[in-house]
Image (cartoon, rainbow, N blue to C red; front, side):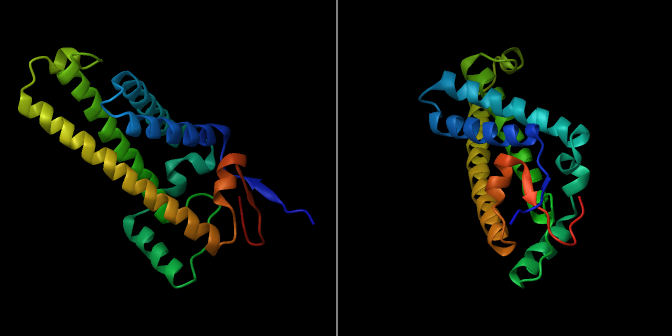
Length: 193
């Protein structure tokens, strides 16, 4: 028996996703102990997020923000419907998943921008070194606190994302992790691409 599938995630989205996972993990575990590695991984995350933001406007259908960014109330209704066992299946991101993507991108932007500013203030390096020259110790500490908070907040969002993927995979009986590798999801009666 063959299963019909439909291409949902284009190669850019899939490569972006998995490289971002790797770069964030490297940045998170390297922290201050391996500053060169931490910095390179952080710049990689920033570059990937910038590219994803562009792709959100010019990419394939399900990569575009217009396809999955919904009001928070719609995301909450979707979560409620999931708990009640009546959530509708989406080929792309569901409303809660879309909100999570926006939250993770925003958190990563704050994490990377504060990291670049901190590098300029503390190490006198990077593109903001000139702007951050002479930054007070209090500003450096503040940047470090914000940087660490959002790095940890991103981890919390990732855990929420993983939980959502698990629940969605079980609820709709589909392997969303495999879909992020292959780009394909099963096509079912009533689905439209």
